[in-house]
Figure (cartoon, rainbow, N blue to C red):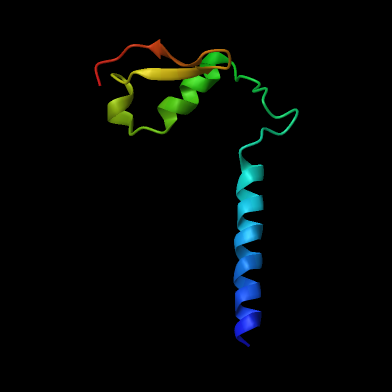
Length: 76
């Protein structure tokens, strides 16, 4: 029984190391992000806010080449 537990533990550690090593590798063909139209992305971002905060909100949009950038400067 003890040998079975040691074997099961070692197998679990080995499988978890293998799985974690595979997570860090990018999958071919998934690195490209198709951006939304800028106006639509801004509308979606603002729709997540309560209506009383939308007018003064700073809005960020995704630029696939550089990351997030400010689309509209706000007061909050």
